[in-house]
Length: 219
Image 1 (spheres, rainbow, N blue to C red):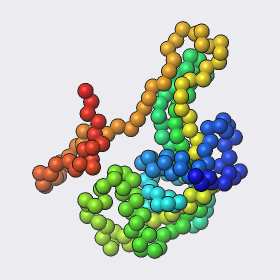
Image 2 (image 1 turned 30 degrees about the vertical axis):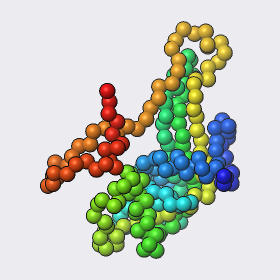
Image 3 (image 1 turned 180 degrees about the vertical axis):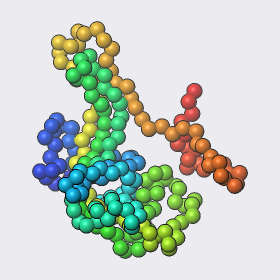
Image 4 (image 1 turned 135 degrees about the horizontal axis):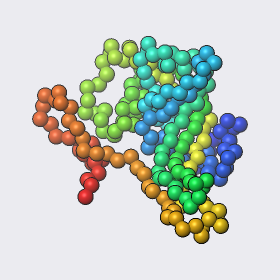
């Protein structure tokens, strides 16, 4: 199990026992997420942009228009911070002070590189599409030459990153366990609902199996 080096920026100082620097944990969180937040500084102003992403090996990829101010800004080699968070539950303690959340998160620091190799550009778009929903790429119209020319793809090496997680019940002070209030965890999860067909659909097509298998049938 490979472990990323701990740096001054990735070292977990608050509740260090919750930190995890293994590639296994970091990659699993990134692979479950649907979008990340990219934070950077532009003309002394902090910026934070949510965007989709995809992972191939030890690289994270994002894409956008070649005319995007955001994309052009982070393509200049500056260090950015990317984060992905998954919320697993609300931790309801006996005291207001001890409330918390169960979560899994990754924070990484990296300098972006504009991807110019056409094969890598193509593979990264597959990864980004499949990150949204597995099986989609093989069923849609693929990008045209014109669309590819209008698209900038930036890669970020997963070399300086850390994960932080919390799980389990509340951690109340000993004297609070005698306080007469319900305490516990309210689990949360991202849940697929009934698909809504595009009103402009011109064909009578069923919902694809790779979509329908994600639907949760509520009783």
